[in-house]
Structures are given as structure tokens and as C-alpha cells.
Length: 451
Image 1 (spheres, rainbow, N blue to C red):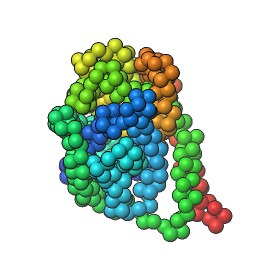
Image 2: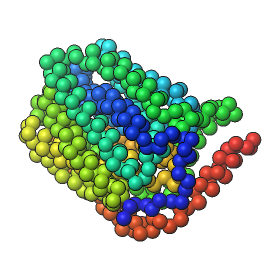
Image 3: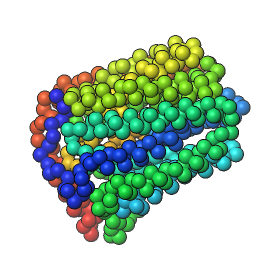
Image 4: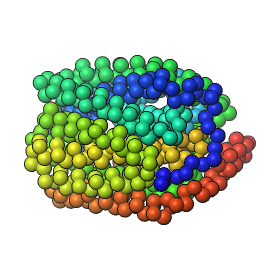
């Protein structure tokens, strides 16, 4: 059965979005994610490889930690998602989308002109801080544009388009980088610039009256409140919604394993296996995305029938094999095999990652907040586990400890999801806890002179 039966709530108003879930909306959404894939799919693998092979220190010990700074920055700075979510409620859509482009895309374009590691890292950190701005907006679009009955398949389609764009662009750019190691200096500025086309398409897709009609309330311009309020709200939501809290705990466990693998993979591929740009891009990014693409639509179908909890738990269990295969890898073919398994499992994780918070939110208005909380906790995982994974490797001088620990964490996360469904699955149709009343009360007090 689904993870949570739909709560009794009003559907989005026709005035919020014309032609709810229309073909025009879907085609526009598809175009946006396709353009995003060209830039962000390549920076995901390119940035750590540039540290290993271009910008990094000649000292291998320091270069390993430089690599961890780059791999950890994106998940760590996802902690800012709750602040982006709060900003989405306050800013008009035009201003929010401009902020997204300036924060997430433009710094990656500037990184193409970096001359040393610190310039490169600064650009990367600014972009990593901006990437979290997309997550709450995307959650809101998914909730308001598409009905519950088809959302899993729509999101699977969007992911499939993203993966097709990623596979094609990584395939071409990986070969380009192998032939011309300075090619990133032309690719990054050009790919960042075309993101502006996506921003304009998104403005066309979501009129300001629907996606972010709110305007900044001058009475609320208080720096400390702007910083502390989203954090307080996140704590209140997690305390009040026990199902969502347990869902996040399971994802936290999975995320620990993910971060261990993320920190170790570039080091293992370059130092132990001697890979360069093309081999690394093809054996990890291309193979895994082809596998994810093949599994994405079936996973969307599955999620629509069994829900995000069971889909995620099944995928976590499958992922427990991935670190073991990495540990046994001896070259391109064995890394590709591990990546294929990873890609199939990640199709289910991607579905549960976004649509779990979307389905668990009690009202459509809370969807951006739930998604932002979910993305913010990715940052907590990045802070906790990226450094631990690298530290385990440095202390033991072995890839075995961090990778075997990752396998255990994946298995534990699967067990947590299984327990969550076993204990709450039959009761998820019960009335929700009175979170909404608490929110109204808190917001009322926040608006009073005493607050």
C-alpha cells in the first residue's frame, strides 16, 4: 500500500496554475531539466577529477584532502536549502530564479578561468551553496503541476530526460577532456550561460501568480529571524511528524554510506586504478546513468503502487553490494559493473528522495518546506560522513574500511525503511498530528510585537 494515504485537503486552485498538469507544462519542465543536465552532470565528476589531475597539490596526502573539500562541498552546502525554501516563500519568481542562476550556474562558468586550486575551490563553493535553491522549487512544481496519481511517472520521465542529457553530454565531454585537458575552460562558461535559457523557460512555465506570488513583507526583514526561523521550523516539523522524522533517519543512514563512497571513489579510481578523465567519466557516470535510465520508468511505476518507503528500502538493500564491488574492482570493466548496479538502485533512490517528502507533506503548501528540510539534511550527512570516510582511509591506508562500512550502512538503512513500513504502513491513513495548527499558532506569535 502507499506510504501514506492522501490526507483530506483541497486541490490546487485553478488560478494557481492554468491547465493543471498540461502537456505544455510538462514539455517546458522537460526542457529545463535537459539544459540543467548538461552543466551539472559534468561538474559532478569533473570537479574532483580536476583536483586529482590538474589543480591539486603534488603532495598526495594534501591532494586527498583537497579532493574531499570538493566532493564534500555540494552535499554539505545543501544545508542551505531550508533558507532557499524560506526565500522562495518571500520573493517573486523572477527574483528567485535570477538568484538561482547567479548562485548555482554563474560561479561554475567563472571556474573555467581559475588559475589555481583556491580560485577553483572558491567558485565551486559558491555554486555548491546555490545548487540547493532548485530543490524546494522543483518540489513545489511537482506538487502543483501534476496530480498524485501520475506524479511518480512524471518525475520518472523528468529524470529519464535528465539522464539522457547527462549521458550524451558526459560521453562527449569526457572524450573532449581526454583529448584536450584544458577544454573545461570553454565548456564551463558556455554551459553556465545556457542555463539562463532554462530560467526563461521556467518563468514561462510557471506564471508568477502560481509558483511564487509572495512578495517580501517589509515587516519581516529581520536578519536573525530570517536565519533562525527556518531552523526552528525544521525542528518543529521533524518533532511533530514522526513518520517524516523516521524517513529522514533512514535516509541519513543511507547518506552516510553514500558519502563514504563519494569521498573514496575519485581516489580509488585515480591512485589505485590509474584512470584519467575519459575512463573515469565513462566507467562511472555514463554507465551508471544508462542503468538508471533503464530502471527509471519501472521505478516510477513501482513507486506509484508501493510508495516511497518501500521503494527506497528496496534500493538501499541493492546498494549494499556496490561498495563490495568497488573494493574488488581491478579496472574499467569491474568499475563499470559496480556502476551499473549503482545506477539501477539509484533509480529507486531518486524517486524516493524527491517524492517521499512530496507525498509525506500534509498540505501542498508544505511541500517546498518538506523538500527543503530533506535537502538540508543532505548537508548534515556531508559534514558528518565525507571527512569520516577519508579519515578511515588515511588512518588504515586501505580502501576496505570505508567501503565495508558503507555496505553495512546501506543494509541498515534498508532495515530502517522496512521497519518504518511494517510499523506505520497500516496506520498512515490516520489523522495527521495537529502540525498545521501549531504552525498557524507559531506564525501568529512570530508576527506579534512580542516576537
